[in-house]
Structures are given as C-alpha cells and as structure tokens.
Length: 200
Length: 250
Image (tube, rainbow over all chains, first blue to last red; front, top):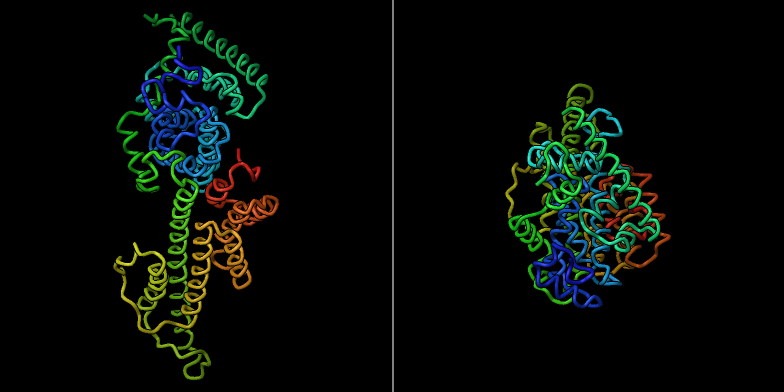
C-alpha cells in the first residue's frame, strides 16, 4: 500500500520523490523529477517499444524536454501524468522517424511489422523470462487504446484519474476502457491456459 | 509458488512490473549524458531547475544546429562532386570544341581532384567561424589556390545562408522571436529556394510558437509538411518546441 495516494513502489525508495509527494502543490526541481521518475520514464519508454539500443537517447530527450517545460507544469500533483504525456509524444516521434528511415531503406512491409509498440526485439526476447514474453503476447491481443490503459493501470500502477489525464481521455472512458481491457486480457489468458492444459 | 502448467495471471503482471526497469548504471549513464547536454548546473536541484526553458532551448538548438551542420557537410560534398564533374566536362569540352574563344572566366584547367577539395573545404571554413569546437579540426584535404567561379558562387551563397540561419538560431536561443522572424524573412527574400529552406521553415515555426502566434505556426507547419513530407524535423525540433499547440502531436 503506498504511503501517500500519489506514491508508488518506485518512489518509496527515493527521499526526493517522497518530499515532492508530501507537498503536491510545490513545483519540483528538475533534479527531483530526474531522481524520482527516471525509472518511470525509462520503463514507460521500453514498454512502448523503444529498443535497448535507443533507450538512452529517448530518455535523455524526454528529460531535456522536461527541463524546458517544467516551468509550464500547471498542476504539480499530476506530474506523473504530465511526464507520461511527454514520454508518449517523444516515443511516438521516435517510432515514426525510425519507421520512415526503415521505409526508405527497406522494401515495403506489412502494417503489422511497422512500429508495433509491443514488439519485442530479439535481444529482449533472449533476455526476458517466459512470463514476460507470455504477458507481451497477451498484451499484443489488445488494441492500442486498451493496451495502453491496461499497462498504465497494471504495470505502472496508475489510478484511473491519472490515466485519464495522462492519455487525455474522460475519466469515465478511462474506467470503461480499463474494464474492457481487463476482460479481454483475462479471456486471452484463459485461452492460453486452456491450450496449455490440452497440450499437457 | 506458481504452477508451471497453468501460469497465474497475477504472476505475469508481477513479472511485467519488474521487467524493463533500469539499473543504477543506466541512471548514472543518462545523468552524465544530460549533464553534458544541459550543463551540470541544471541538475543541481534549484527549485524549478534554474532557468530550464532557456537552457534546454539552447540544448535543443545546439542539437538541431548539429543536424544543420551535418546537412551542410553533405551538401558541400555533393556540390563538390558536381563542381568537379562540371569542371572536368567543361574542361574537356573546351579542349575539344572551343580551344581559344571561350567567354567564360579564365579557369586554369586543373585536374578534378584538385578542384573538389577546394569546394569541400570552404563550408568547413565557414563552420569554423560559428562553431569554435570545429576550428581546430584539421582539414582532410589540401586546398586549391584557384576555385572555379561556379564553386565560389555556390560557396558564397551557402556561406550567406549559413550566416543568416545562424543569426536566426541565436536570436531564437535568446528568446528574440521577432528578430528571428525578421532574419528569416531576409533569408527567404534572398534565398527563396536556398539550400537551407527546410531549416528556415522549421525555425519560422519555432519563432511563431515562441511569439504565441499559433495559427501562423500551424500554417507554416502545414507548408513544411507539404514541402518536406519526410523531413526529420517534423517529429523533432518544431514539434517539441511547440508542444501540443500545433495540433499535430500524437
């Protein structure tokens, strides 16, 4: 259970983040944001499909943007949602520019091959355990919108209001989308479990 | 303990939470890179991060300027090759068809290899004026003492374009949006189809965003997209600088 409503596991270990969470109206310093949310930014970007060989550049770009725009943050209490929005835009730009480069350099490919946000690189596949691979396979069965809210809720442990703000959707939509995503995930999981039993 | 034959969904979620987390080395490495880009002062923890807008604007401009310089280098290589080819074919034609009555400027007939490095060297020379870090870089090729008129004209106009764009970049970095726009207007008047047209359009979008003239920024962005649909800048500087305000962010 988080110590404070806006705190999650990755922040508990960080005293700067704790201080920032204790006073939700104070604009945090850039250093506080870096210390408190580096893990969040990194893992969000990786889960959005940024490969290991590009993650440093993408995370750096996120923090450069944060540095430039931290002063425009209107509600410090919603810092995590705001940060997610920054990560989302930069990762999206990363995928588009990478796809553009690949399109120029390669023969035409099917749409399913282009920049799938849950596509794991061969390196990732080699490093990640079977459970994570299975999880990503199940996530790939969700459409983009549902997958995004599911990941934010289940993996990043964000609340529905935070998700609504981060993704830019009404709160009711966030709730209904999350409910639908959980249902679809459970169904996909049940199918996998059933196949597993049949094979066994 | 999880049953291997029927993996538990909650265990999958737990594994997913633990995956893709950075370690201390990742954190330190990115921090070092940021310090290199933003300067150590930006990371020392002043409330609000000191003067973030100015510093990171400068950082972005330096990143974009690096792209402009690399584009220029490529352009210089291409123009060098073109000039070499034209000189070579021109010399050949003069040798064969117009032995003595050419009205073109007197150009010593040099081998192509001795002309190309000259046109390659001049943009580097220009860059050294604006970019001290490159000043000490040794030139990889010897210079020719005489350059063809076409090469000199190309080099001079490129030099002037670089000068104007550099001035606009500095003005943007200093928060002088109106001045930057005036400089960009001058560039457009003098070089309506110059080698740096794309960069000028991006800089104009940025200047308009800086001045909160969003309808004009959007219109300029639209022109940029139409003129350069594969521009690397589309997902880069202009969008980041203007944020969501352009209505083109994902």
